Length: 144
Image (cartoon, rainbow, N blue to C red; front, top):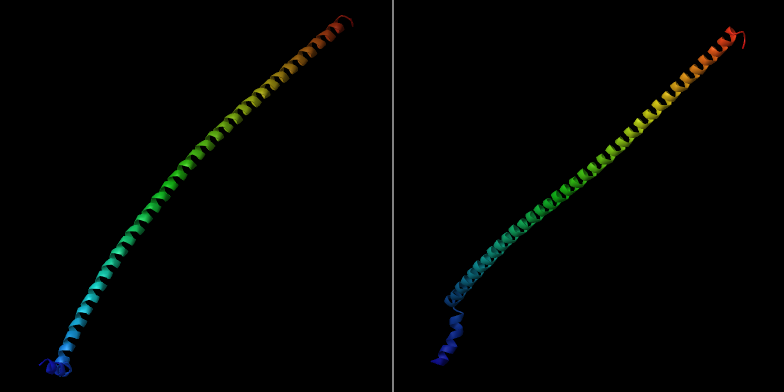
């Protein structure tokens, strides 16, 4: 019986029914492989979507940090500019005070010069008057 089975086995395997069974099995295996491939692709797509979401979040975080850094730098620069402006204003005020003092000193010197000039004119007039008086007295006294 074993010998017969061995002889019949190749014929059975090559029979249309056996070929159909083999074909059905191959189709089933192919369907399983296609389903597995589809599941792998879906998993890869989910992973890619998660990766994209993560990358987008990282990008947003980086952009937010850059904006914060830029704002901090701008605020620092604004504060520095305000400090420099205050320093410049202080220097301008000091220069204005110095100019005002110089102008006051010049006016005071001019007033002193004017007073000296007036005093000189008054002294000259007094001397002239005295000389005129002396001359008039000489004339009145006969030339002495």
